[in-house]
Amino acid sequence: MAVKITDNVTWVGKIDWDLNKFHGEEYSTFKGSSYNAYLVRGEKTALVDTVYRPFAREFVDGLAREIDLSRIDFVVANHAEVDHSGALPELLRRIPDVPVYCTANAVKSLRGHYHADWNFRTVGAGDTLDLGGRSLTFIPAPMLHWPDSMFCYLDTDAILFSNDAFGHHYASEAMFADLVDQAGLEHECLKYYANILTPFSRMVTKKIEEFAALKLPLTAICPSHGLVWRKDPMWIVGKYLEWAADYQENQVTVIYDTMWDATREMADAIAKGVRAGAPGTTVKVLHVGHRDKNEIVTEIFKSRLVAAGCSTINRGLLSAMTGILEMVKGLSFRNKLGAAFGSYGWSGESVGLIEKWLAESGLTLAAEGLKINWRADAEGLARCEEFGRTLAARL
Ligand code: FEO
Image (cartoon, rainbow, N blue to C red):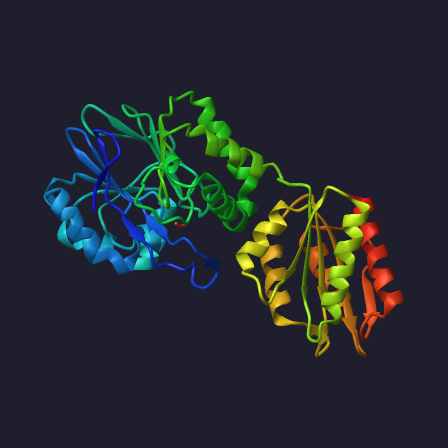
């Protein structure tokens, strides 16, 4: 399938309707995804990015139906991760001498992945590729989200090919962001930012400011996942600036895991206390063993305070809670409050362990953790509600 984006740009990627996990098992993709590749035609032709490895043969065969492969003069590899570079071995097997334009870090990554020494042309900020009648300008974007990541900009069409940035895991033949359900799309964009880009927020802001300083017109953003932003492309740029500025909503999220419901009952009582103490605040209660981990991270991203509760097992935490806390630590959230709670039978390490995780993750502890021995009775539940009110007062 090929779809015309403008007279000079054609989408030649792959919509992956079946994808339900990404980055191994790390990221849920309930709406599938796409791997976007674009043919940019001037007097000469450049291919910007390819697709995920399992679709390599299908991609190159489809590309050959769109253009005689020998007429592809340049390949631009904006990013070396295999969801975008995975078809390069198959493509370059058929057109082995075509130059591959990418950053120096991408050369390292591509060599590391494919053990091939292709005709690399290393580019840096401001370098251009003349297509005859139009040109691509390269804009390296290191750590958005890999060291090799790069954008490129097509002057005549004022299109930014942003690779992973401004992307979303959203399979749709609509091709353009303005043609799909906007609330669902925004949720996917937010989830993508929260789970992938949060640690790099300072670099997101800097890169957007750098691009704005170039004062280039912008008619569309073509990311490497999901839909093309053609109607008000600055909307998603504005969202990124908002999300990168330690984004918060008026929300508290209570996450917990529990063996015999005692910690669940604490979670519900704490949430009740937060609601009583901070009316108008959205309070969500999520069982980390039952809910999707990336959706939990998205809720944490939106929150001002996260209360985490867990039973103690074998002097430690239940494994689902450990997994979420490891994700939270890696994502380097800023400007969030945290608190710990949990029931225990005898040794009772869970609350102290959660507090350690939260502190190491950069969250500020809003109150000393709450431990309840065995299952809370009426007095214990009242303590939980009071704990919730104390947290509300810290907001
Ligand atoms: Fe879509 Fe970083 O790969």
